[in-house]
Image: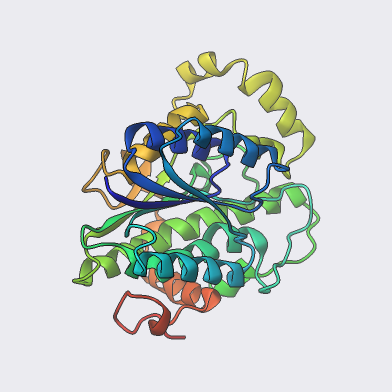
Length: 334
């Protein structure tokens, strides 16, 4: 597949394997790998660079992107759009919105944009990135891959203490304040962000299908399963979760997989992500896939009225208007 694929959080556990798979299976594809810290002082970026260096003829660019800043997102998107327009990069064929954030060990945080950090990094900034770059896809179209989790579905995740949901006052999703139960509310913020991603993607696909110039771009939101070797389990989490990963989830994964089918490794998920963005898996699918199998999401996520309400609010939070996205229809004005 000739074209450019962007991956955010490209030094993450799943993304590293997706990058390796893309480089080995799609050598003619250009990769723009976005990370928060591009230097080798970040051991994960160093590992990413070592992975890339094993493919000396590849066309790969490691770029800085801080999703906690809309200014940084806009500058990144503008730079990519300019490089595509000037033929310095081939047209886009995919965006993988892999980067994520959660915090279950401290009070919720506000970004400089005044938004709760988990919701901004996971959902708002990715929506801004996608909408600003739709015009940089070529005539062949392409694939948008976003990530949800079983946390979006009430009662499905063992870390849930408060169910996810879209409140009537939808701005509560991006507010933050001190919390007594940091773990419980921190996970709820994460679960709400994953619910928002999913609902927004349903709305995005409806708009894409209506747009004659963009209808060959499809979006799919995937739940890759419970990744037992993910470093996320050791980041901004209670010590008990880290201990569980080290002494239970990792050593017992072969046994756990016999009982819990959604237990997976980052290598398994990474290969699937690469195949999906290359349209080698579920090429005609839009919407939601759990464990790489299309299926129904939660009841609330399928509420089209709530999807639309979230769509409008997300455009407001992300500062998207008809002037800075190729998607037409007048719906992005706020």
